Image 1 (cartoon, helix red, strand yellow):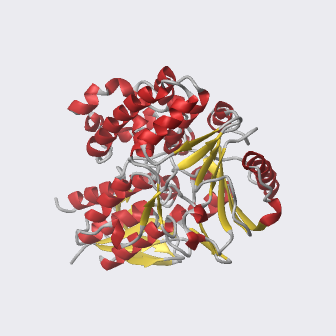
Image 2 (cartoon, one colour):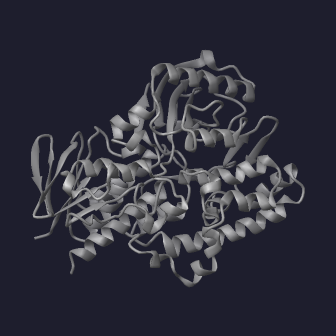
Length: 487
């Protein structure tokens, strides 16, 4: 009889693991606390408007293709993917940089800003491409058990890049602050300041300028639905509105969970929920990491998000837009060094209905605004409204249009919601930052060292934050489970 695995949560890493485990012959049952699946990548539909309430950038298309290929499928079997042209715009105080859909076009834009910069950019991206190959082929597919996983012929040659920073490397070659900010932006997806992120992570720049920015028709939730469909084709059972109250342990071995007051027995428990929260579901003696351990870790930012419906089409914007018209370094300090509500925040604005007509009624616009903030901040309706007014005024000024009176409705999501909806530690949005001391084997482990047959997956363990890493995390933990149960 096949062994039964209970998976806690239905985010990308959980759905990934569920597919791999079901393919390997396990009986897999997912329990999701919310009414809909997807974890942080859920969807909001209202009055004909469709919002991705979490991830909205589709980068590293090769990782998605590899995932579906492992099951004899293609992404096109489930959703339609379009490369965005341009990829995004960056608004500065006195200029706008447009990042197009090819490196040659981006070089032209860089030359406009800083003569001679395109030569440096081509070399930088060539190095970033090599780092991407090493990262994807040699590093991220390792389970984070030992420092020796990082020791290969390729990584030894790149060793110095683990001790230099992205910020330092970028600023050696590029002097214009706008180009610097544009090149430092992609590592924000890793949840840390550029001057605390190893320069090896320049592979994110290749993901940006080399592989491009894509959009699945219908939004990122189409990927969730695709993984749900695949998992159910493989026999996975999914239960929503089923929060886990306790992970049951007997003789130092997991034997099941309690959900909705009922005991559900199993052979293996895998949690794709917040790692810190997952351990609170255990008796204290079985927890690997103390409260002190978590409090000392560098967490990626939280976010203040707004989902806004407009009764008109907007002008002078693209699908993705970054507003870097304030002090980048000050905002970073107010997230990481002296956590507080930002003085003058950078922000991101996403209008998927510009390229995808299915996401809003005709003649209208679906909008998603995001302000990165420190986790654990006070979160009140008054603060949310104050910051919405602040960024809307700047948005109107920078894009030369008055849209305040064209808002049909507005909903927000912030620290309190991340805690309530996802049991997120301090309301963080992206997990544990990928700093040097929180990379690979230095991250929380996929496998519990205190409870047999208890495993973890997701953005607080390896490889780290982001949707493609979540798919990989699910694969890594499934391989550990298969290995353990074939011995």
